[in-house]
Image (cartoon, rainbow, N blue to C red; front, side, top):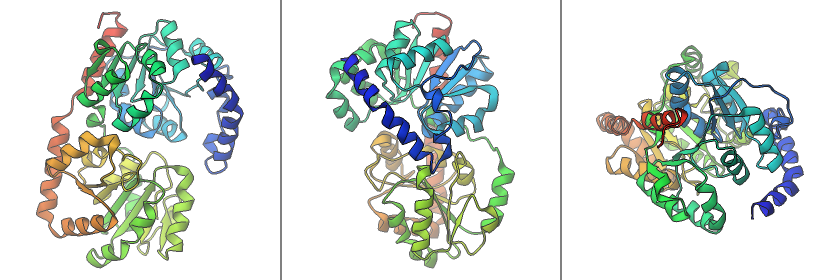
Amino acid sequence: MRWLYSCAFYLITPFLILRLLWKGRAIPAYRTRIAERFCWDKQKLPVIDVWIHAVSLGEVIAATPLIEAMLVDKKWSVVVTTMTPTGAAQVVSCFGDRVIHRYVPYDLPDVVYRFFNQVKPKIGVIIETELWPNLISRAHALDIPLFLINARLSEGSLKGYLRGQFVFKKILNQFTLIGTQSHDDAKRFIRLGADVKKVTHLGNMKFDLSVQNSAQTLFDHLNERMGKERVKIIFASTHEGEESRILTQIKKWQQAIPHVLLLIAPRHPERFQEVYQLCQQQGFNTGLRSQVDRLNWQNEVVVLDSLGELLGFYRISDYAFVGGSLVPIGGHNVLEPIALGLPVFSGNQVDNFKTICHELEQKKAIILVHNEHQLAEELIHLHANPQEKHQMIERATQFLEHNKGSVARYLSVLSMAWDGQPL
């Protein structure tokens, strides 16, 4: 059936190019390096030890400590592929020229053939759940040991994959090993058809998040411009439908917390201007991160229209709400603000981080809310009770520390494969 999938992919390819050009109107990075996505470029690469695919920003952040260990401890040469410009920007920001970045090839037989002719990795690593049939099958045909690591599969995603189980069963069993974030993830991959001998729970690399204090001078300057003494609430990775609901609560926060400032970081760059216009239309004094000289104490909201700076803004904030959770997206990484010592709030639609969020909630280390009204009330209550806030941060920090160590486990497995040892 892979031939049918490939034929369909070829048919939609012109529309993919048009989509890149269209998205490039708002984000020029989508228009650049299109040839790379088809491996039409003639870039000559050095000998590559490891190829890592991390689809976007979140996966790159999760993989960062592992990549760092590969570079520093193992001295491996690394190629990192991403699908999105946000992921690409994060790779460049974190590693510069210490790794080679390329956009992942479109999953067409001739394209992946050219990709592996160029890259020729000794081992391949895919982060989380990127199941591209032609890419994986070509690596398997070339006897490249291929690992799906930090793998996750929600119950909702499993139901979708089960419709094509006859395809995905074969794909999964072309991996050398599938290392999952949780025991529940492992069970779901086995239900999808993965050989039980290939699946093992190795933990979630997001617990090993690196929070290096980079570019602190820049964020200190931004903090001064916005008002260093002001209480800042950051709304991270927000999606359509969340910002409008959050803005309905701003008057409550302003009454309870004098001079409070809302920082809104939309998940997708193409929505930066849309969110900025929404805030202005609602009558709020709104600044843009990109217009530093116009930021001032009068701003009620600042839209963070930049890439790869979220950790820096967490560092200068007082409270964090992680988006994609008041709408049915599945939530985003709550561990990043926890690692930077913030009390964290999230909506309760967190299928992508269900196990982590529920464990944190049980330990009273995060506050999950049903709607924006509860969010406003819970945040105001926590701000009025600093001892409770401190205890919540302490419990979350302990939870994070207790669950660290998965990067070392993944690196150990990959080292064995790199040395040709049986797993």
